[in-house]
Length: 101
Image (cartoon, rainbow, N blue to C red; front, side):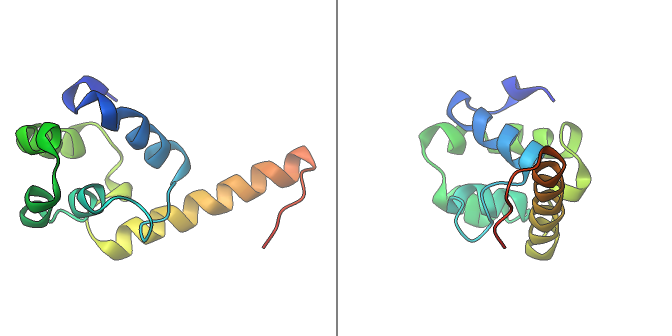
C-alpha cells in the first residue's frame, strides 16, 4: 500500500481502516466516509486543504492500493468493519483475552 499518495495526516487512519476496520463508519470523519463510499462530491465539500488538493490522488489510492472490499458504498464499508471486528474478536479469543459483546 503506497501511502505516499495521500496526505501524511491521513496515512495512519487508512492503515487502521485497511488492517483493523476501525473506526466504525458512523464515527469516522465525514471526508473519509465520503471517499470510502466513492462520493467524491461530498468528499470535496468536507475536505480539509490537504485532502482537497489530493482528491485525484485519493481516487487512485483507493483504486490501486487498497482491497476493493474496504470501499465502494456504505453497505460495503459497514461489511468491512463487521468482518474486521470478527477477526479482532477471534484474535482476542485465541490470546485468551476477554471479549465484550
